Image (tube, rainbow over all chains, first blue to last red; front, side):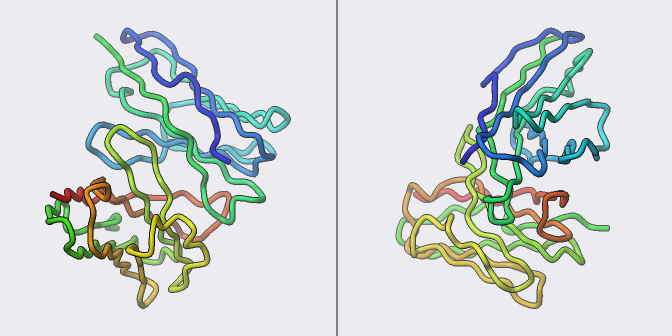
Length: 111
Length: 115
């Protein structure tokens, strides 16, 4: 079942903070976060694993609440380059070895 | 090394024609995924390969869609008798393996337009 992302869209001024949430009705092994800029392919941001491990290469922080089956992506002091659509993908026992993708959160950063 | 590559980058075809889309994954990646993305929408899973076999074909929209992977590397997605609703960007991704911790790396996509 598709994870639910919120908000669907958010508009920020440069320097402001944002939180994007991803909730699942299933127990999760991992949550993957990707950013897609207009006309480009999605780019990996971070993986959060059951048990607390995180893997990522961007200066973006995130949390994974196993009990709530929810992950949040924190974008602080946003830059213009953060604009794009953020997708979460969830991996659980029933996902048949594939990521189940959320519908995306569109982030617009204005100067 | 090189990333995931896809060809063609753009394809315009007439309704009813067949098209082939190609994906060349990152060398050594055993898992390969095909997705479809309509304008402004999310990622629609089509099919994935583990090596040359496709354990999950559940996302293919109809029997007009088929995919194969040979030599554990290049994959081809074929759409027969294309319809206008097939117009979308087709994305391919690959990962080292299939698992909770495996990062998917996406290609640039093929934009398919069916007239």
